[in-house]
Length: 240
Image (cartoon, rainbow, N blue to C red; front, side):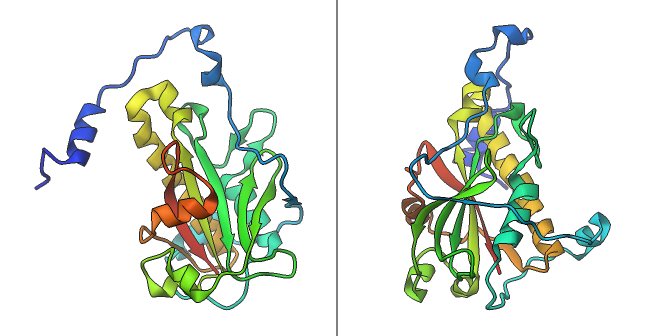
């Protein structure tokens, strides 16, 4: 039985009440109606243009989706990343800035980062941020990772065999400025929606994919250049 004094129990009980919003949207502050993007104006950017063609049906992909902890030595290609990011977390309607997963109030608090461990001919090993508005990768740092460095990020030794890791970090204020503390629930649900998209696309691309909670969050956040408070890691997936 759950301890009613636990932090999770108290948080759940105290966020059952929704923050009442004005019914008249014209009275909403402008920030509630503005979608924010994280930008890195001075950094090199790699466009994501060519995509992998997927022939698998949705039903087949759903039925065959499995978590896999076995990874090949092959890198994830740039075209595979283009498909994963466009259809997993990207904008699917440019005029309305809608995306491939639901977001409470259309606030889209998630930012997506990649750490490439296994380089391909078109994508060096290193740390990247997905520029969702441009469908491109911001190059945060080109870097080769040693086995020791990879092991320092995860609690499982097999994680070092992955070709890459994908991380979702949450900019909490985007949702919480509209929905208060209850918005935190929506952020975690949103990360799950986006993570399932990545899982299904990885399966359709014949890539192994494993979501995991065995992460050393502060170490990863330091690598990604986020403070862990206003923007913090909420979801991690390994691919290869």
